[in-house]
Image (cartoon, rainbow, N blue to C red):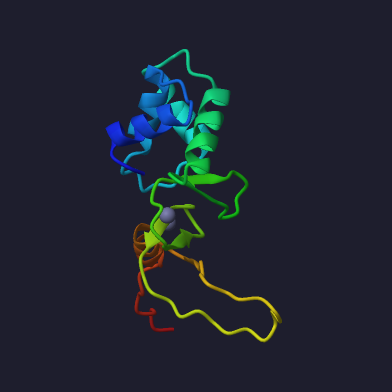
Amino acid sequence: LQPLEQLVERCRGAGMRMTPQRRAIFRYLSGNSAHPTAEDIFRAVRRRHPGLSLATVYNTLETLHQLGEVGRLDVGGGAERFDPEVRPHHHFNCRRCGKVQDVFAELPVPHLGALPGCRVDSVQVQLIGLCQDCSRRSASKKPPERPRAPA
Ligand SMILES: [Zn+2]
Ligand SMILES: [Zn+2]
């Protein structure tokens, strides 16, 4: 996602009517690394813009996607998520809390014999595991080891 004012100009150029609601959606997305769903965006922005409709959120996201300003992401769990980080990156998905984090790492492009005639030129890897919070939490949940009472 570009800086707010540049983005507003680009969207105007693409024929989008700039409303305070759309600006608020841009502001919410700007620098947001939580990979929100359309519902998340709707709920957050509606607090200050009660007239906002979910349809406005969806079509604003659609335009931003067409302009290459947001990525769409399916990490399972139903809802599609939106990502204002458009530089190539991978994702780490916590299987317990569902948090999605960006991973910037160069991963080698595999040469797969399984795709004859195709040329792979980018790789997106979804890493799955426990995030820092969840792995800490699961470590502290383990019952403390107690010495056994002698029989
Ligand atoms: Zn987690
Ligand atoms: Zn991302």
